Length: 578
Image (cartoon, rainbow, N blue to C red):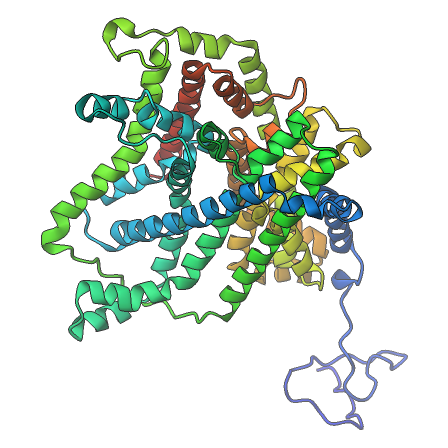
């Protein structure tokens, strides 16, 4: 047995077991008293991990902080604050706030009702209905706007039939009410996803106790379930309101014909038409205001989530809410509304794509494929599709690598700067695409990317890298560190253990996030239309240009193809999951 170390003069610590150290010839290893633990060789104060963290800070600083700083600096150094009080800006700001807040409230209400019906009730056909209810996520908002024009536009079948019966149109979708309606339609799936995840964490024991105590179904839902969903509802409201605040596609297609101007359409007019002096400085000032609103909303959401009370999830499976006699009627209403929201736009796009001009009756002899041929063979469409595929694939690859590195570093290592790095990487998710585009538009001439498609690529990476970071961080946070510790004890460096263990575990999540980035970028419009330059037209801009040029049926044909590709992708993903 090795000789025991002689007792030291200090007190002996009992809170941990220290291995005995064999004596050496010099005697220093067996010195008296408890010795401070020395960091092993694989935990050196500076190694590959710290170098990688420094590189990630440089990349995130160049891709995220630099454009945002350019907006702030340009807005501060040039005093255009009085312009914010002008009539056009005040009106556009009021329209933006009203439409964003109203649509966010409506989306949260619809998402909450769907979560209760599809996840906690015995509604008929819940699985199929859930799949249909999420399809608006696959349709770009501006494509949805074109589709709904074919339904409730001035020459749409609804208003045409209503005019024949009652002498006037039922409801023309153009204007502020149409903007709010379509923002709700394209936002409620996000609210549903958030509310559904929160609903799964609500203990079913509380609901069952309320029902046993004599509470009715409505009373148990309103008194127990809904109050526990308030933090999630507020988070969904904040996310949707900030996203809708600077949406460009729907207000430009639905709002502008009735002179319903929002901040996004106003900025587009300033940049494209030059109706004001120093348009970039004016736009930067508006961007700073939107940036401040986004950051304030994110801070409020963090404070709400930090102070909320988390309940332990019940071990018992949640009991479905029995609708009883109302089951049939509720199922009919739910199916009718979801089918009207999802299938009617698809049918409207199909009819517009197959008819030669707006207002032509839908009859067999009037059907033609000329619009589809014209839309797919037009030079602008070919260039736009090529650029969109190239930029979206590159954005997906870059975001996959960058998001994988950032997500792994901030979740599997310890450093004081990890929280700040994660905040910087996730910040663009709370920033409207309008602000991101303006930031890159300001710095483009200084970095040599002006009038190039690579400017759009940089903006895509900034806007969507948070998707991969969240996809990677979520599974890694729930995975124990035992494997990395075993690798480090076996002699691997921190970087080697991180690459061999953590990165390999996170690769599937990063790839899934990268695919989502590519699918989102290929149909993006707000960033692309503001950074448009000769030769960098994207697919979304091609559809928007056709719509603005009056080629409504050709725009509908191209929109139909984009929608069908998205639905096919959803079907393939769902098939692989099962």
